[in-house]
Length: 172
Image (cartoon, rainbow, N blue to C red; front, side, top):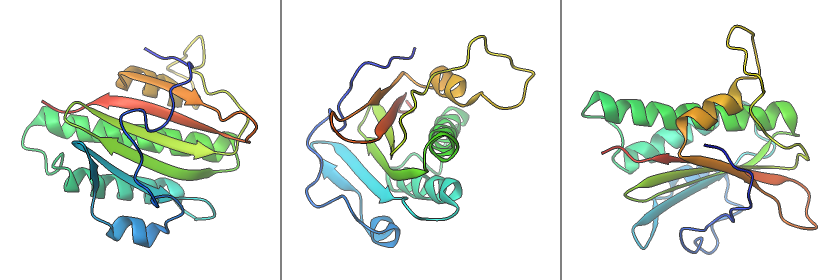
């Protein structure tokens, strides 16, 4: 299912103080932040080159730290691959339709992993309708919609840009 209703970032608990504005190196070296059973990681992508593989590698490191990888079963491996695919799609959309991503935020608890990609774009992400599977391009948000429990867009009034978020179920 998809939605574009406002769904504020950090809705699963308070965001860690001082976590924003961190360089990629500092973020990836930082152990997972834990808040009430929720683990959080974030990385600044603004101005970086090769942001899609950077975001995937950062996410893969988080999945290892959170015990999603290495996967013991095919279902667990598929769940981790779904997260990596959603990260790739959201970051790629920010590259193609905005001025590039500013930040990637990941939060995980026992039931859900939340992916947020912030950018300065004005566009409204939506799956293309009708979806044409045989045509190149335009499949990103359709893929996100199919893989995720829910997704949406958050805009801060008076500020440029948006945060596109998606939530996936944790492996059983």
